[in-house]
Amino acid sequence: MNAPAAPHEIVADLGRRIAAGQLVPFLGPEVLTLTPQPWPVPTGARELSQRLCKRVAVPGRIRANMWHTAQYIETFRHRVTLDKLMLEIFKPVPEPSLLHRWLAGRTQLPLIIDTWYDGTMAQALNESRSDWALFQGTSKARRTGDAPWFRSYAPDGTELDNDVAAQAATILYKPHGAAQPAGDVLASDADYVEVLTDIDIQTPIPETVKLRRADMGFVFLGCRFYDQILRTFARCLTKHSKGPRYAIMPMDELTPNEKKFMELQNITPISMSLAQAAEVLVATAPVL
Image (cartoon, rainbow, N blue to C red; front, top):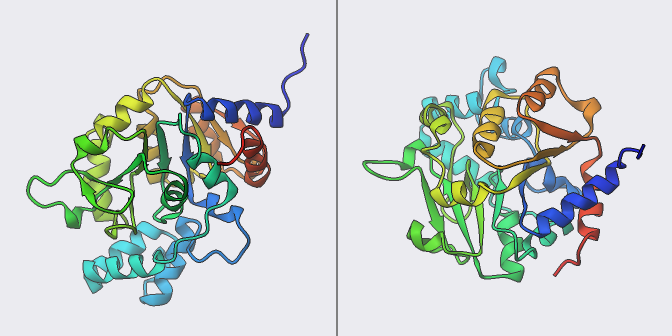
């Protein structure tokens, strides 16, 4: 009987499958920790909430919840204040890590999903390629009339027609919005009310993302699922995909809710630190 594959062998195989365009990398904010400290932007929702609370006095009972904190600022200090703070916090673009640059160089990779607000993955793509486009979610504050749930942009930040952007070789999809190029982000509870109402029926997701993920699986990198919003987005963005699904994270750090979610969503856990996994992934093919 063959012994089960070691974690590093599994991750190496995932790297080859990502490079072949078979698996979608699903990036969370912790991928920013793969470069030397200090990181110029927050690397998680709780840290972002702390940053916001340093700028605006927020009741103690909600300071650990980024979405509640953002809603308080929007309600009592106006949406303009929230947008300004988010743009200031995420104005610095962290230096891309070797993992960012490795992903950017996978020319057969049709889709990258990045769930944080920073511009690091876009910068890595711009360093090596021009055949990509950005799709990003738009906030409730920016959606007026018949405005769509999302907008698309060229590598230089010029807004594109969505059908034109869909022709790009690689799509970078940022469902929660992005600080660059337009500073349009989903952050407050109000932003998410409409999205969460419709995301289960897939309306807020660009058609090209649905088409590209259909025959692919997913690898969660630098993600956590400790909040219902994070779990809902992960579930709905991977919905109707072929699979399989993997998550690389130290299992002893997960909450019971996270473990239950991964079991229900058929996500295979690979217990390895993100830094170790990144080294293995990058070693599967040269960084261009």
